[in-house]
Length: 218
Image (cartoon, rainbow, N blue to C red; front, side):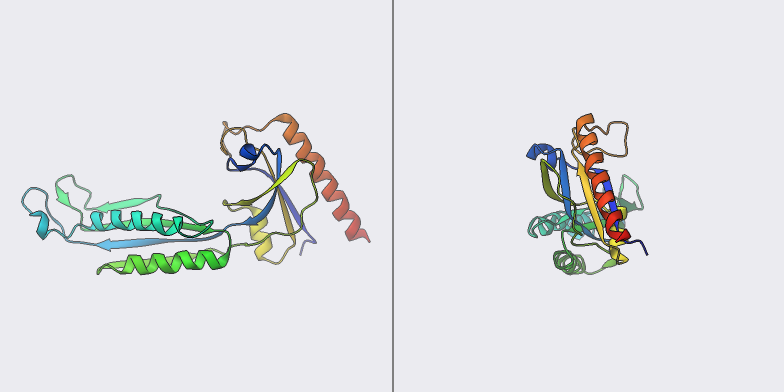
């Protein structure tokens, strides 16, 4: 097993730019739970089925999306996203009979993640015919010690990283963010950080690796 793992990455958000800090020590990597929710309704003709007689699966799904948003807003540091939606039978003149949607919930620690998940399941299953399939990911809440850096800030990571995978395996980790000057865009040609910020980050990373190597040699 590695003695330690240190990762340098562009911040995938605007916090450092807003704070005027070129570097950020990552305080934790968000715990994540992903899954799918299925809503069952009843198919019907769009022109001949009265509104009061409808069992529209898409309407139920839309209500769930709004409740999910409100739930995440009520848990400090939590976020929730519905990024995929499959409507059946997917015809413009047919009332949807089945909707499957994705759910991505993230929080700063396992306790807050679990609070969001429990409330999500309760809200999803409150409607007859709806189901909730949860596939939790291993979250790496908390962070290892990170070297001191001039003009640095502290911030959590809402995105997953290699450091989180190794931390879950018991490897001591540290992570450093470089300020994004383009709103946190990453893994894209539009990703942008100042040259001087990158140089500072490399200096800090080099110093940290030197100290870690010395500690291992001792």
